[in-house]
Amino acid sequence: MKKFFVELIKSFFILFILFFTAFVYYIYTPSSAKNLSRQIDSSDPNTLDETRLNLSSELEKYLSIGLPKDPGKTPTLLHLFLANQRKLLDLRIKQAIDHLKNTPAKDDEVQITSLLNMGAIVKTEHHIIAFDVADMPLSTVQKQLAPLVDIFLVTHADSDHYDSVLLQKALENHQKIIFPQGLTLPVQSDNIYELSDGQAIDLDGVKITTYQTDHRLDRNFDQSNAWYLVELDGFKILHTGDGIEFKDRQKKQSLNNMTDIDVFLVNRQIHPYDIRDIHPKLAIPLHLFKFIHSREELTQSTFKSVFDIYRQYNKDLQGINIKFLFPGESTVFQKSTIN
Image 1 (cartoon, rainbow, N blue to C red):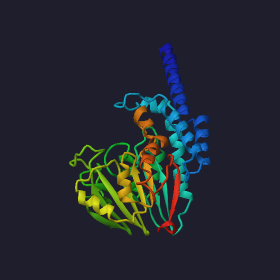
Image 2: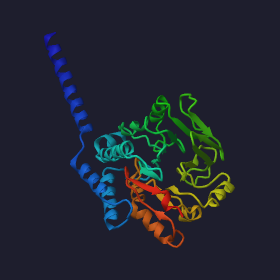
Image 3: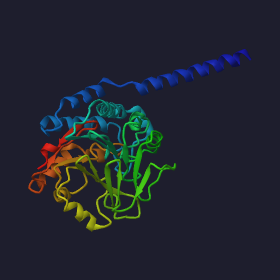
Image 4: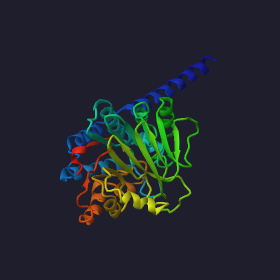
């Protein structure tokens, strides 16, 4: 019996060491991630120069380690635990949250912060809204947004756009959630708003209009996908999610006819002609450095890859300010720049 208890204690001790080692590894952030994050911080988000393009290549190399080459495969949870990819992105998202907490917006500006994939935070003097906050496996960093954001907008249910745990935490903090028709949470709340195609709603001075779309040109309008037009504090912000084709093309034409959209948060897969037709004052390509996808999709979503496409349409994009943001990076659009 004594021998049995000795062996049992040894087993528990070994398990404790294993779990402790795994925990330390989980929270440890390597110097390589810190150094790359500092390089991003020292670059200028308002200029896509050679330094930024080289830094984009460095980020691609860092994030690509261990990713599956098959475009149909995604990284495993084990990869996300062992690789430094998650640790670097945690650093970047934490910085975005610190910026959100500590940098007030002036009455004549809107702050735009890039998260992951199509995720973005929009902050004005009076409101904070967030689009498509991704579910980050093995990470709790983005959950910190729950009490900070007034309105969460979700374009569709893919996990890199939709985090049900975060959204339920937001509801616990009495925040509001916007879904396209047909998309729901496994909880009920008066603060969940499900909008149909073309429907508009005003929430505390924030007007939101929903436009039903397909998903990445699949032309399936039976699934919940949407673009959102948000009007707040004198600004018009348009966000595409993964939508490309509109269920009602007249509604797309109505957006083209507006001519006063300030900021276009645009999926990199949207054709430059669509950016031309919307003709925003500022376009910010998103779904860059594609997280939780294959190496091929990551390579196709770098600054250089998207910039190479855009510069083929320089004449069509004249007069549109285009800014490329790294994950966790912010820029400011001011009313004084409105023509």
